[in-house]
Length: 437
Image (cartoon, rainbow, N blue to C red; front, top):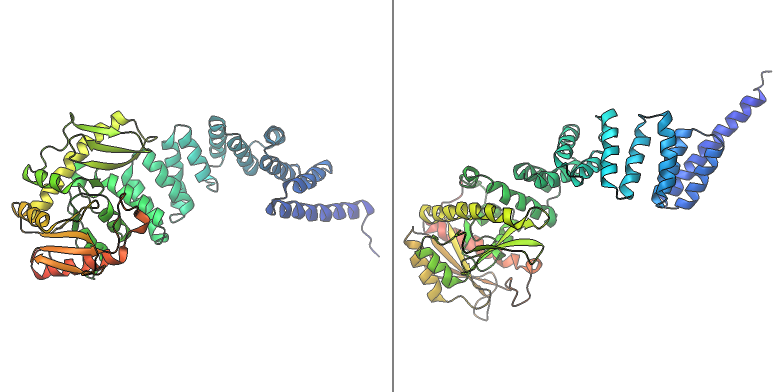
């Protein structure tokens, strides 16, 4: 009868036991019981069980308990023996991340990708570190290679979009956010980031900004209907409605504010006062920069935060973009086919004001005007009345306004959808805008 030598039997027992202990350590980690997991890994290391496996496990537990010097010591010892080991190098970089040592973390990720250029499990982590360390292009290059392998992975696309924004590559950012938006269509935050990137990309070059907008779809898509409407100021409500409906038209006053009386003055002057360097300033009081004219001709969101660029650089950019947007506004007015929207969130927009607006716009072309008011006893939310064939008034249940305290999350989308559809179909019937298809 054959028997197993006692020394071999003991070794198998040890392997079986150590395997069970490794499982227990990992199970403790999953439960967040880092102290218990550390005790197991420490015991296994004393038994001489697989130095590399136990070193990684021990370092991971120490990192999670912020015992970073001990973790580094264990990892350095093993990297002397296995300088190209994937797990050891990755854990080594993650320890530097927890230490908030960005330059050292970036150096360790560079070492990792020098030896493992096609291992993209940590690509997002490394790319964001490169960007934070002042080298966003290195991060973009790494993520570009990672995207080839995983073209629809949000874990790759989200940091790629963020880094593209940092590089002012708004076209690439818009592309990435667009894919993510298709994967997560109900995420309002993603939709906003996509819209912001599209806005910047469309203004990046004059040739892009002044290109024709896509032809309407044949079906009655509210996003296409919403694109036909253009704000004449007051605040961002219409722009936010368009974004919520998936429309991102580029308009001078889409995300800007101006008084109705001032808009009439600007129409008379063909918006010539806009973009005067002597009167255009950057307001730095909030996290987002605001561009404004000290004569009251506009107050506009730049969609640029303080950490993205200096106010001086932004002012030069905004002067150029205001000029582009001004030309787009004139092209919209002269070309017709638009529905111009005026509202006043501080007081009820009057019939006389809407007639005056229509008269001013008719100096450019025959176009539709839509005034927005609060619903009352005679007008239900979502209803529309017509002051003339080319002048409509739409009624909302509540209006976005700092005066009323109604914010972006409380916009009356139901009424807006109803008003936009009714006014669009009326304008088509009166040959003021083209039908879809």
